[in-house]
Image 1 (cartoon, rainbow, N blue to C red):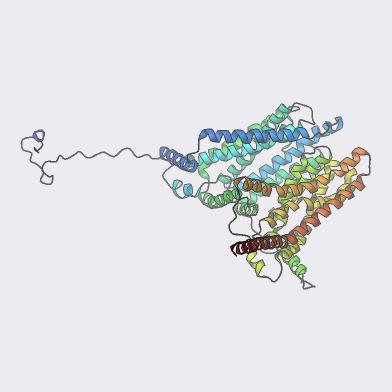
Image 2: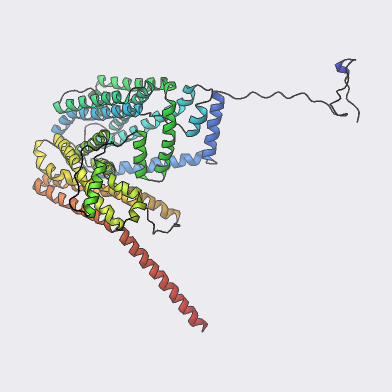
Length: 579
């Protein structure tokens, strides 16, 4: 091989002794430009999205969305059309026109309260742990990192609230003047404004470092002011925002101010994203990841616990008052005292939240009695959440199943005894709900409301009891259970809907007084019959809690005996044929 020609280096140049003969020294390759800043962040997120979605085709995703939207929207419209509620009368329409903005303004005030408190506790934006650990500490502007998750948070909140507003709007349009399309659009507008106010107030409270006490005080001031305005029948601070929901019927130009306020709050919060606390984002990242997993597994009990941790809700170090010693040393007395020791440590925020849920239940139940039958679904959902809050002693027993199994008592008996404290806890909140129902129905409804207040509240909370007990671990169950996907999907849907169905049965029985009033029968007698039916449902659910494990053990033993008998018959038949 000939040596390369080095004439280009000049006459005095000599070959480099370090280069082997017959090889040419190649020029060093210059490194390409390294992607930094926005380009690196976009590439990182796109790569993560591709790995998360895998080989999922966009057409398949669009088809799933089409099916969910078609079947979901069709189901809502079909159910709405199948409920033949009467058109509201003139006096009812006039009362709605005067009172509805104030009551709907309470929803806006509560959204502001929740937003301010959530922002003071580090919300509403949450990042993945990898983003907090690496991206937030990289030399990239924080606004660039936080813009996408913040916009996604705003978008998801607006979409969910608008969807709920559209459903409620088209239900209202079936009884009130105006077209269904106009009422649906008004519901979308009202839901979007509420969502923007919630997210915007949370972002402002977080970025401006508003103290928790000040945020709570400001939110409570708005809620109390609006509540007093509703009670006195005057215009409150958020009544104009509530009036937006009635734009499907009539429009007031002054209401549009709240649209600008909502957009301004959300825009201001997004403009101050770089002021979000890194410590709060780090704390929320792990909790949000666990929360998403719990929602995927339909573990509602864990979802409630994680939501409390996100809100930094802690039990009181001291109970509201001390309990005396138990006079009778029985299992029921011990569990009663132990349950109340936990209930009396509830913080004030949880008690106020439960009172708000009870008041909303009373309002929705009153609306159902006045003729808006779909309001029963809202009552059942709120009662389910209230039951999850009140049945904390039962939840603690389920969470610590190993301790319960170590006691010389049947687990079903322990869970059954824990129901007493939770049901007693619901009595004062039933009075709150009854007062709210009387405020809507009038003083003439005092007798039936007094009869039904406690049974309806306790009955609506049965869904929470079923959900908690259903998630209790079963040591005797088989570790591996194989079922077809079709059966698994049906079982999952049934597990999700069954607690809501149980709560709906109790709230649906409260329609008996409405039927009696329409037929000219005694409303008080109908309320008594409804209360008796709800009490029977409560007793039936309590017995299910008590005997659930025994029945399951009996069924398993019966199935095991059947399998053993079948195996024995096969063995005898085989030996006989061989002989």
